[in-house]
Length: 506
Image (spheres, rainbow, N blue to C red):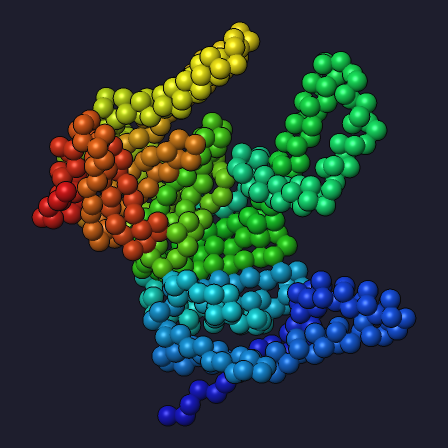
């Protein structure tokens, strides 16, 4: 049998590599321009540009790849040669990405994921290939997953050439973008950089800012309020811009063996995931999203990003619908309240809406006690300050009262968010559903075959309250999923229900 020949990347990359290399070394190139200008010979500044561009061209000539029956190999290196080899059965995902320059030239970057953490220079990345070759190549790389029989679709679930559409993005969803911290994460570094270079000091010392100090309290309050509103507006605009750029045109397709995601406005991205490694899903609804009846959906998979997002911030109904579609082929058939196999108390058939079992008064009391500690510390600190410095203004004593009210509300919300349920197996796997958190709440749906071990933990205070934390260990997602502050008498029973015959030990 003849050996599979090595192939080069698309020749059009000769137009892309020099540009990307020059952009990468912009700081160095700016320095060379300054040196060339001050030396009186600006031609010297062109030498680094030519060297960087030449290096980009050499990358194309020294990069080859091949795909045979057992391995995918990539050979790179201008000075030192390196060959990266990946066994085909180890391939767990195929990620296709194309920025504006690649899209103009009809190219895309294909990245192979093996489920292990690798350095950036160790990634198996083919930059870049003709987009017309991508579908066939992706199918070939994931051929070991097998293609299961297509699922039947109802009238509301359109079938496409690559699978069943179980979710898609809508423009109206952008209104949920400001309810996350994404905008703050974008604006904060810019503001910090501006402060580092003296912009904040310049604003403070400017004439308008100095005049504010001579104005009335009302004017100062108005200026502060205007600055707060302006900051919120900038953060919201940044969040909306990032949301549109990342998730525009999202479609989620399920063909039974792989899940395919496509999204992006300027840089398009296509992700194909092997559903054989699927172990469940997480419905994430932080406080602000929850108040707007919205959520986001993440997958639990072995060897993948522990928070691989399927749907971004979206209406909760849409997220629950996609969650149900995602689990349709991985769970028992739909059940109704009249079925004898349904545990008493289940109010729906979707894992995203099924009622959970509360953890009782001891768990609620534990949350209120933990919330009371910060209030008590603040109150003691204020009393000590009053004894040392003298009487404090009367209005300051309102602060611990307001703080106590906020902490009590947080404690109640944390308790109401706490719960779990086990849906026993019928014709599919048993499911463990657990929910915890308040400011960042997660509802984790984990299938029993994905659980590889259990731990029952008890702190000193949990032992006194008769509570325990059950930890389900898995090779997927976050690796550990907690059933928090469950009555200890129920802990072993829960483990035996999810994995019959396996006894829990302290």
